[in-house]
Image (cartoon, rainbow, N blue to C red; front, side, top):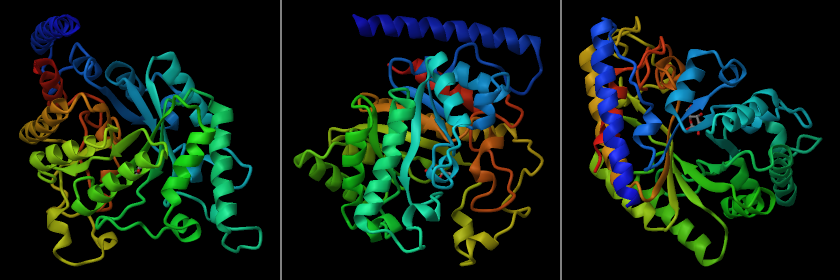
Length: 387
Ligand code: GLA
């Protein structure tokens, strides 16, 4: 019954959006057309759809990007401001303006806020791992420091943050544990200790997840599955698995995505796609030269559209790729709680500077001028057509 009502609602929304498209197409010769309904509405009964925000966006709600988030997204993640470095760069120094604005903005707009990230080897200041004399901390002292961070979050934000990325990127492609300072100081039970602390200190209702990239690489995926099953067997609390989803036009294939979602969901944990983007320009032809990646500079070959004009045919190809990815997500919607894009417009994307500095990349659903790409319409259409 419920299902039928939702299907009817979707059909109605789709016809409204088609009419709106035709009307606005007649009124304007703009290259893209603002869809009548939000992306989140096309997936409303399937999973949350999110995007990242930054300090400017949460401070000034009149910004085009903030307006896009209000219209199109039902979840949001701060791209940097909760990371240990930006949040707490020195002992007892806290940068809370952005995080506070984020908590208020998401609350006032009914958007599910995600805290990214409690413990990550990157963007974490040196002081975290050292004592006053500059010596590496003992295991107990680092665990205590991690606990203080979780305590601070709980005290300051209470239950305002609904989802926490507890640990990010602690497992390598081959499935071995990353030899980060966390791992060196604490030992191989670093991830487990992080979840015990998070569970003891953060609100019980907050969803606590393990997040990583390359979640179609055999080694990493099998270690994550083993780890989750082991945690469950020993009552170590973990709620969800975060799949970053920094993908390109061909890699990973939809078959690989499909198979890995099936395998990860078999743990019984919910899945969150946490950092989705499609690197349109790609990296495939960059590795071969065996040059240090940070020495590769933008040139005519690896940076074909430097002026910000994304050709219609490329927009269509990007839309097709996103459409096939979202079709797989929909197939797994009972196990997927959220799909979050890493950025709102192409101007926000980290892929303009990685792995090639100074490229003009086009990985997201909104152009640099905040106008929607046709790819957005394709993704909305996939959601509305799903039966
Ligand atoms: C990683 C991190 C994110 C962000 C992205 C892209 O995946 O989890 O916080 O830094 O890289 O920059």
